Amino acid sequence: MRRAWSLLTAAALAAAGFLAAGPPAAAADADLVRNGGFEAGLDGWSCSAGSAAAVTAPVHGGTSALRATPAGQDNARCSQTVTVRPDSTYTLGAWVQGTYVYLGASGTGTTDVSTWTQSPGAWKQLTATFRTGPSTTSVTVHTHGWYGQPAHVTDDVTLVGPDPGGPGGPQLPAAPTGLTASAASPSSVLLSWAAVPGATSYTVHRDGAAPLPVTSASATVTGLAASTAYTFRVSAVNAAGESPRSAPVSVTTPSGGGGGGGGGLPVHALVGYLHTSFANGSGYVRMADVPASWDVINLAFGEPTSVTSGDIRFRLCPVAECPNVESPAEFKAAIRAKQAAGKKVLISIGGQNGQVQLPTPAARDTFVSSVAKIIDEYGLDGLDIDFEGHSLSLATGDTDFRSPTTPGIVHLISAVKALKARYGPGFVLTMAPETFFVQLGYQFYGSGPWGGQDPRAGAYLPVIHALRDDLTLLHVQDYNSGPIMGLDNQYHSMGGADFHIAMTDMLLTGFPVAGDTARVFPALRPDQVAIGLPATTDAGNGHTSPAEVTKALNCLTKKTDCGTYRTHGTWPGLRGLMTWSINWDRFGGREFSRNFDAYYGRTA
Image 1 (cartoon, rainbow, N blue to C red):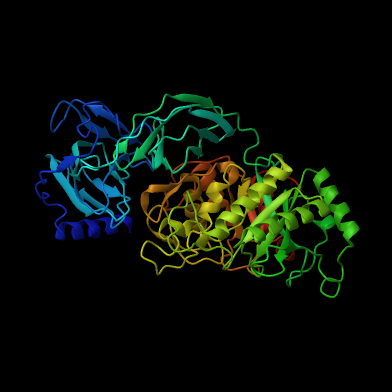
Image 2: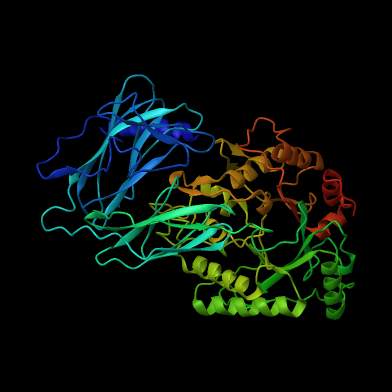
């Protein structure tokens, strides 16, 4: 599907004249690309790690060119942020050799452009013209190849248009000073520096990584590896351009330990929801009677007093509905016994009927205090976020998962961070979103750049991304789902191994959000991912037989039994499985949990 879309787009661009040579530059125009001929190596360019280098042959002009090689999910993208004038026309150009070589500009403030060449052979010129928006002061120009294609060559990249530093324009800012770095976690670093007079934004540079634009004199860099040394530099930006880079600063991330906010889980864990406040037709299971197979027990559910109150309440199932319910004292004693046996017991917030929205700071603060009260009263190990339905959606214009602006999203992230800070590194944090809120983000994100889409599409992505350093487990519900497009650009339907393989591959590989290769949701660690399934046919749509579950595990952890889908890696450290629910599993003769135990050679 993606390849077909690109062909159609290319045809449309050709019809619009984007593949023809651009108009001659006006007298006042200038070429704004720095080192567009790669005579100074990769200076001024940021390329995905290890994918690109300056070469001396072949070249189109001068003595150097860019040679880049796609590998796996890396399309060998090289980019540069260029300062431009608002409400002005620019022409982007480059000469390329290779198959499916792309040239484009993003962040234009109007319609971003992209063009490409389909066939290898002689040098071909690509050009595209765009107009900047009324408040646009910088754009990102980029070139990349395509997945599975051989190396390509790019040379003489230009961006011709009005010079933002011309007469009457602002002056170039000075290089930032006072840059400091500290490791916030095994996968993140905090940076700060002195504000630069006249700067409107800053760019954080790290070797082998895409530039990180920020608006203030500080930044948090995430997605790093544990026990690894990193070097950072920062530049200041305004309408005149980008300053020289600051002096470098180096920092080493600490060791990973148990990972994302919740050590103590076995290498392969089984997660289940326990109906503690209702029976739901499957029968009530007392905490003391939960089989030892279950490593994480999520109490279903804590629910709000109203959708927007943030006030979460939890109670045991009423006797009228659950005649065999234990007393609160017995329930708490059973929790302590499970914990003594190495199990984790969490409060799960939300569920199908518990819509939770945090539109205000007051709702956020109430959420923190009420959830903490439940955790403290029952002596729980952490929190499971099971927001479904209309709990999460993105406001119009909230288009970048890396920097959300929707109040309900921002307040939820802040609330969870506050709970994490309150309980410390042993706090277990899990999430159980539906595929609509995660993997659908590969195609659609929020209401889209022009509106009209379902604003809930991909709405969990900013929450997962902001909390990835604190996240113990993400177990997406691979059930009650419509068909979802995988990284093979084919639709996959629930109920068989193929669906779980494709959906999990997306989480462990990462993916461009809404198809934007400049906004890639980074892969999660395998130990942070479990597959969510219904325990029986009664538990939910999309039940998967034990044989198909085994195939999915074989494919993801051993790369066998994969069928026609080709994963982008092999992950023996995949954490395990989640199910709805412990009650339904017992109702079904424990088929689900026993299959898991047998697969990993466990006795329970």
